[in-house]
Length: 400
Image 1 (cartoon, one colour):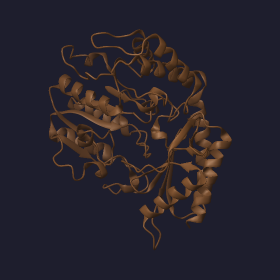
Image 2: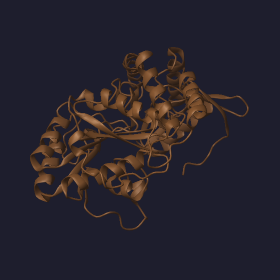
Image 3: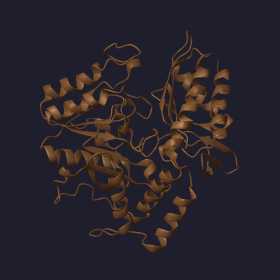
Image 4: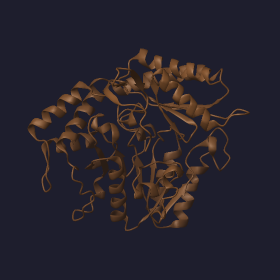
């Protein structure tokens, strides 16, 4: 996987620290750090649970898992009320695909090019990133792909503003295929690509019209990252299944969940997950504490406030740098897309920028070779956020 650049000795709040005590602001965090690293309430909940019940063996459940399932059902939009836990997001995606097959009697899926749903073979098959699909041999059959809502790189030539032809094309493919079990997509790409307001309404209606389920993958974006508890709330739609993970374990414990409509509880005799740690009491204790922190510390409001401030700052930076092609974001999920100049390739530019920032104490993700994704902890202090953006600005100036 990604080469290791250093050895970490600590992770706290919005930053990480190497063995020499050098602190780096982490605007990457593998998308697990909504409540920051090592939040005291999450750590304490895990310690307490280890003393009470460290593991739940098969054929049994536990009070902590039940409480977390109830809390997620309470928070989830619409009638999403049935919950299955998994040790990771990719596992939860696999469970969602199984539920779709069992509920519809079909096996085909429609998903998006450039999407990411995990690195297992089934997740790569529905995913659309060439990095994960190339040179690994045959993928799963029946996994159809359509263009994502990305006006900057749209095959329908819609220009800088999405004309929703991509949403209408989903309807077209569902009609032509005729036997699709589910459309599966990230609500908001963690790159980030933010679909226009009507996009999901058109796709939701198309799914209903053709008997396909709608599965929304919010593994990196749920739990406050976009300024809402769930990203689909921005679009006022309810999927048939919602997949969450990463930050659910509070950046302390691996945990994911599949939340579905009650009507999809159709496989009581089938092992949809069967994972060794699927109802982990320790992970669920971390999940409960994480949700409490998000609600009680006002992290949804904080994500919106700090995200708006950061976008304003980024626009000021972009105004004097023609290499920045686009800025976009929602909550504290921000994207800076670069375009090549007359004599430079965009991928080396983005990579050079990333390493310049790392040298100054800022880490973030480069996606698609051209987009800097900035996703700090929702608990980040205002001066830390400003410092991160200063580093970005300084590094851009140095690489000009």
